Length: 308
Ligand code: OGA
Ligand code: NI
Image (cartoon, rainbow, N blue to C red; front, top):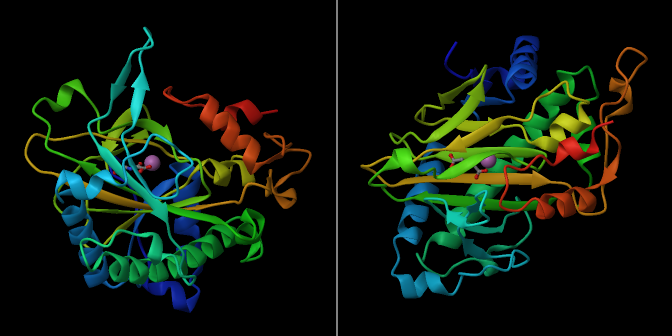
């Protein structure tokens, strides 16, 4: 009970009903699961992790060009922080590198020149994750009895695709801090890759923090807030956080799939009935993001402000 589901996607091509059921159960109960045999070659996953580790360990001068507090920058390194009751800001024990990604469009000219393989490795990984996300949206739609392309269509065209790579250096006193405070992802879908052999990610389950063990070759699927709203609460947005450790640096890479600013998000009509009235009002994603920015530095509760 104190572990999260591991779902084998090797049956996908056969269109297995059991697979659809396993996915929808994990989405309904926890909003998080790991996938294996997902079709993303393991050597690409290993290369992207090794490249990120190299990037975060580049000399300060090389990374400094990306440091900014301007959240509107497309490519940036920043640190999360929390405002305490006395309004003092405390930084989390991590550094985060954010930039766009896209499975097919050229985006790599925006990315770092060092390490030299960064752009190629990332482009390859992005292509693979794009295909996987489409497959997952399909399974998640089918799990609700919807047309296979329903959720992806509702998340809308011209999605906002960006990645967050997190670097957690070893921490002398992990019990005094966190790598990343508890949160819900705000987008529509997250695929997270974590470094083999180093734990850190935890999910809130039945009142406890449960460690998401790195499984070699696995990817972690996290359901964000837009998925909870679109499914009128049938699927859960997972509450999660990252802790640090004393011994080893840890890297994780989250690829997000978000609606564009103008897309209207609200419960899918087929999931609404007299017995299941809408739990959320519809909004433009831009409104959601404005509320998100208003709650900066807090344990955010963004979708809650759109509850009916
Ligand atoms: C995130 C996240 C967890 C981790 O970037 O949104 O939840 O394991 N990361 O680093
Ligand atoms: Ni997250």
